[in-house]
Image 1 (cartoon, helix red, strand yellow):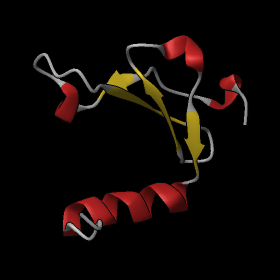
Image 2 (cartoon, one colour):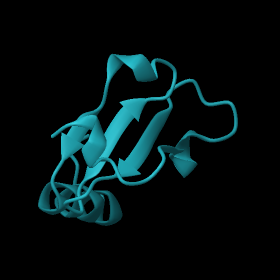
Image 3 (cartoon, rainbow, N blue to C red):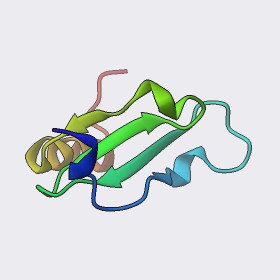
Length: 68
């Protein structure tokens, strides 16, 4: 996937607002997936996730199923 497949502007995660040091930005991709990057160093590039991968990730967040 290339940069041109990103169809929205990157936006900062709401969890990263308010002076947090750990900040991520998310943008939508043409295939319904997401691109994620570090807001402090955006030139480093983004990680791309398919729509299915993103849905599994969001579900795990909502259900708190990550291993701690």
